[in-house]
Image (cartoon, rainbow, N blue to C red; front, top):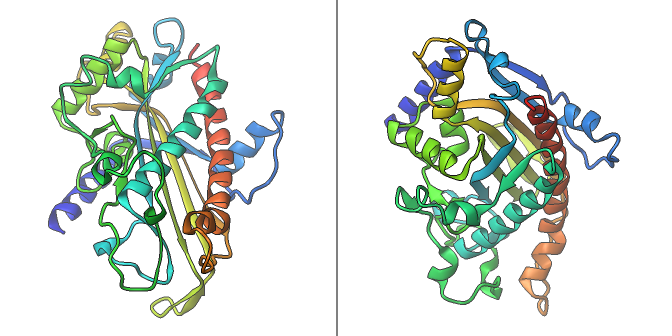
Length: 340
C-alpha cells in the first residue's frame, strides 16, 4: 500500500511540474449515430484531449514539418482490464471470464483498434504488433506478457468454460490487466504503461528501450492504448446509500508518445536546452468514459454461456467501444496531420 501511495504521489508531483491543457469531452457518449462529416464534431464533444504546455520550450513549434513531423506510428502498448475481480472472487451473480477468456477478448479489442487505424492512411502510416515482435531491439528486453491462451492448453478459441455465470463469492481468475500475446509487460504496481509513460517518469531503461525500438522501426511516435470495462447488475451501495443501475462502465484512453531520443534531437535542432525533465513526451493524450445500460440475464439451462454473455453484455460493449475508437482515432488523425 505504501508503495502505491508513493507512486501516486510521484504522479501528482509530475502533473504539477507543467501546465496541462485540456480540450473537449464535455459530455458522455450515448450511442449517438454520426457520419464521416459529423465525426470530428462528435469526437470533440465526447473525447477529452490533453497535452503538456511548456511555454519556455516552444513546445508546439517542435512538431512541425519537416523535421518535427509525426507521420509513422506504432501501437507498442495495448492494455485492458476486463471485469477485474479483486482477490479472485465474484462480487455478485454475474458473468466472469477466465484469464484465457480475457486475453481472447483483449485481442479482439486490439484488432478492432488496428482496423480503425487504417483511416490514418495514406497521410499517416503505422505498424502492427508483428513488426514489434520481430524487431531486434524489441525482442531481447523486458518480459513477454503471459500467454494465457497457451497456458490454458485448450486451443485458440473461447472455450465453454471461459465464460462463467457465478453467484457471489465464487473463485475466479486473479489476473486483472491483460495484453495481446507477444507484447511486453512494463506495467508498474498495476499501473498500465499508458499511464506510467504519460504521467510519470519511467526508468532510464524504459526511456532508452522505447526510443531504440522506435528508431529501429523508423517510428516518429509510439501509441499506448488502455481499455477498461466492467459490468454489474443493479445493486444497492450501502456506503453511498443509493441504487447503482444495471450496466457497463467503459473507459478508453490513448496517448501519442514522442520517444526520448527524437524529442532530444528536436530540442537541439531548435536550439533549446538539453536539460529535460520528462523522459517520454506525450504529444497528445485522449480519454473518455461512458456508461452503457444493460439487461444482464444468465444463460438458460440449454443455452451456451458464451452466447448468453455476448447477447446480454458483450455486444453492447463492443459496439460502443468500436464507435469511441473511431471517434478517438479521428482526433488523433487531425492532431497528427498538424505536424505534416
